[in-house]
Length: 239
Image (cartoon, rainbow, N blue to C red):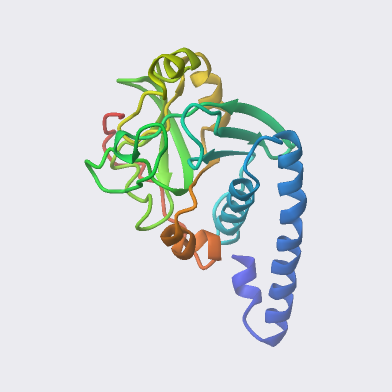
């Protein structure tokens, strides 16, 4: 990165420090703009999502046009997924989203990146390609946080539509249905929502988990080298 090259030497450190300070100064304005168009969103979730995405870009990840934010601190019966157009600073979707069976009932309380856990994972994801699978039109995700979500591709954690994600199901059962760990959305909006997030955009899953908050590299911006997409891996079945 240019900043890495500039940071060699005393003058470089000054220039790089100024660049990072300028970058940090833009965060509040973007966060404020997103909260204005989504006043019902959790401010902490949105702030950390922008912070994590900005850190990833600073470490060499591609810049994005759109950002999805999931707030797993809310029950499944509430809308807790927001998709933002970052360039136009607009809210594209304000939606319900399911969590994994291993994470809890109405509330998600447990999170895991282990195969077979059937749990949701926290942190920053990069979106990859779409495909047609067992659950129809789906979007592959690459987890960027080692120890928290970096097995997402291998676990087949994808965005897909599901018949158990809708208001009628929630009224009848008292919660949404649950996935095998995927952030499943309403079938009626699955395709346009997936299309808005496909191909090198970002998704951020939030929960006030002390261990993740203290150890996520993207929340402290000491991220490792940006991981490469698992493009050559076999396509696993979606959950």
